Image (cartoon, rainbow, N blue to C red; front, top):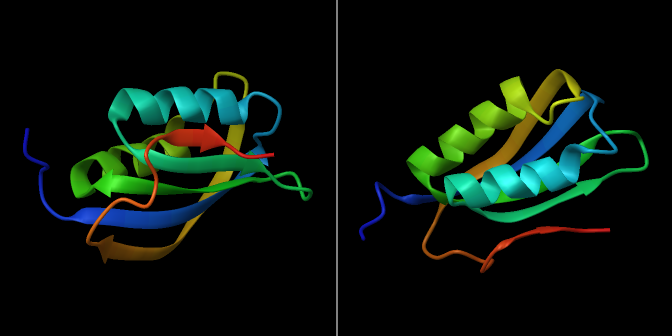
Length: 98
């Protein structure tokens, strides 16, 4: 199976009422879409992480992170940073960090 387009990597931070149920849902969605990376709750009440994968799948995950989120969350805004093309994936799966 060929990947559609170049591999991308992007960091994200989600603001709003997003902690508590966010990371497990984010992990599940990432695995469903087919991206790798990580997610964790921060001490300031946000959820942060990194997503890597084919560009179209990363874009799908970015859309989910900024518009959908976990069922009980309220997303105020999502900041994406350090978006770049990568030659290979740095992670083998998507994980929750603590």
